[in-house]
Image 1 (spheres, rainbow, N blue to C red):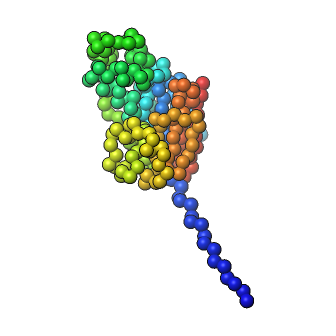
Image 2 (cartoon, helix red, strand yellow):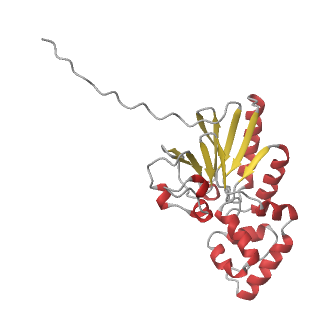
Image 3 (tube, rainbow, N blue to C red):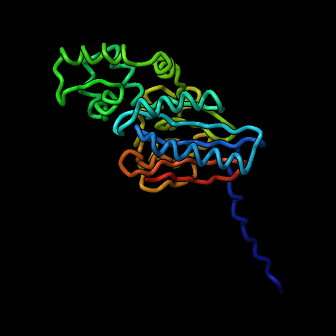
Length: 253
């Protein structure tokens, strides 16, 4: 007598995240004042678009353009110029939030300085001491307000917190597990780490983020981190998304 054995089929793998047909996304991690790496990346993107034209090429920058590195003002100049000739979304990072807050609240300079504010002030032509007293903080705040070009003021004042395309949700830091993506708090989008990084469940979309530097980019089932610590490592990472393909590009010095 023959015995029939039943085998359960493994569940099918989840579908790969996709962007719409005819769209290619160039998502760029934390730049932190490294205008040299940004220039090199723009040259690579331009060459890629010349070799492989596409209907819609979308640049998405994940925030933290300033601080730590040597040329924050130059990075902003380049992003503004790029926006004149390409489709560009520049998201807000926690470092941009600190700059905007400092203009209104000079006393936060000691807090901002812990995140690398002094190179940013130098890049705008200011000359802060290493440990500015309250009077100097107020003066520096006023000087920064005066030194910022109008185009930079407009740039910092109009940075969105997130961007969605297809199955992807782009944000600076991450999202709060269990909270719908359209209900996330600004603080979480700008600052979250542990609760987001340790969550293994779905967020509803694939999250592309920076904020927490990693030595090597890794594609997790629910998120992709593309902050490779450009200011310290000399590696600026770009994630290229087209259909269901995911490709990493690094510019290094």
